[in-house]
Length: 278
Image (tube, rainbow, N blue to C red; front, side, top):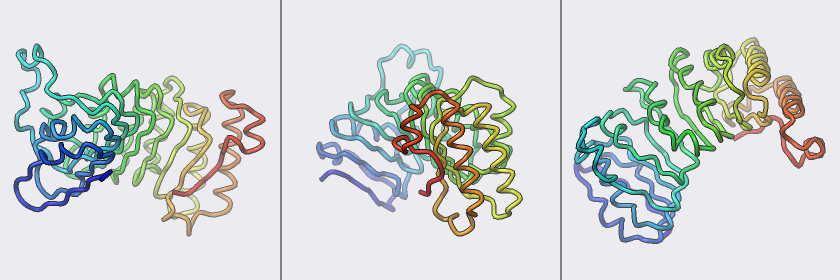
């Protein structure tokens, strides 16, 4: 058995038996229909030496965790450890301040997917990713949300806080102009981002023209290495040839001007540029 997906509707569930499945590479708790104590998760997977992907449940409790800023807990050894090969996490937006305060970022994790809940403030995404370990190690971030403009723009600083971030996927919110306006006006250091995924595209042609303009500006100002733009496949029916051609030109020009890529490999296609669908 190389993966485990758990589905349950009862009020209580024990993850202890899973700790004996030592060959698991994927543990998926995202379909659980009950509240799970957060602490039971690292305790259940800590000995799974081959585990690479962990998807957390939508709802977790802080049962067993010390209060944040408790002087006694600060002097205590770490409450838990993560498996040594863990690379990918999927988190439902964690809203519990005690869980956040006790969350130890796995040092081996380089990719995270965050699914936003509509019931809690959006800016806690930044809290979830605010640790030094997350900022220094994350290379791939995927955020699934449908929040309005003023809240989506809060995630703009993520692009500059992540020192190694090469891939950013904004599904449900990536075409919101507030996100690009905030990046353009921040005048931060240049971001290392190479691949940007967005969805959904605006239906109106006028708004798609504005999106091309925004993307061209943000590439010049903040994302000089971006060479690939991913568009959700659900948008393919109303993506015009004009939009694809314009973005292909913008992305190739961006890659050439960045000085980061081998020009010969860019020209012969060994380093890919342009629009793709996911």
